[in-house]
Image (cartoon, rainbow, N blue to C red; front, side):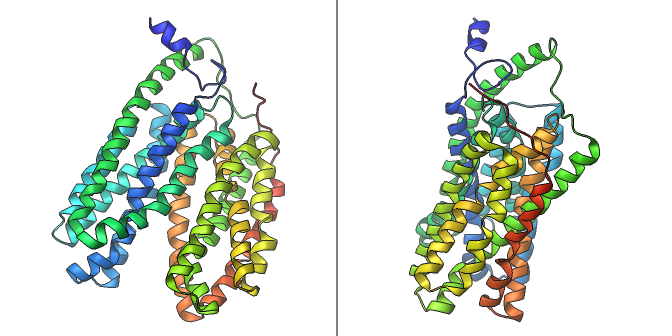
Length: 407
């Protein structure tokens, strides 16, 4: 009976043919729920500040604790999972998030709030590295597409979270955060089912490894390290620019064109929607044409549009922002998969590093551009940020790793 079940498992190109789309879309849905919950935290800051009389410094400490626990632990958890994969750790991580949400809903003060956001951050740290491993196992060789399906769920969650916070939490207060525990419970249930699939795949992989040698990267260590350094620079370029867009694009539109807050939010939503579409398109192109070329096109190819963005009228600015979102979003999945191809025996650790950089650099970029805007102006920081995609030129030095052909 167990052999029949194993024969039906899809998603590992060396064992069986095909892509396990049901697993990929389940992981994408769980990523949406996870990132939706995370994005609720900064949306709560005005409410918490008014209720408890927090200073901006205390709000900064809350952000710091959340960012540290949700980013810096990811490589270490991923490294452990590479050697000791735990199929049900995904569901366990979501239980950390569930506990953090319930604690946050009834937190009586600053210390308890710090504890609650730390628990939510730890849940995220457990989720992302292991989820990336599952996405690759379910890919059937279409690694970039699999990573994109997973990643676009997170993009959707980040966009929906603040909207739900405005509709649910702001009118009803801090305790209404508890309703988001339903999302964590749903994610934990789905991840338990994924964990069962994952456990069966691990058994099949273990059996295959006893007969076949593990795939390894054949590039020299110096070349691998150089390539990883370039990828880190690409993440810096992409997420510093994106931090400026997501945090200050609405202020730029209001300041330059005098649009209303509501109209500026619609324009930001257009950028975020294009970003989500670009993530999926980039995954497809990475598998078809090579991840190096998608990375090069995504970062450097966005430069003409970003450089024009601060100098156009309102319509042109919105059009350029949409085109920029479509192009620049296509890079992340290709970057993560390219990095794991360089370290095929350290998929969890490598994914954890790059997800950690994504969270960390996004937070640092937002703080940096906020500081710079106070010293100069919103228009100035946009002119500065639009030069960042030119750093994509260094991607020409990446070794050309062609994706494996899949049937």
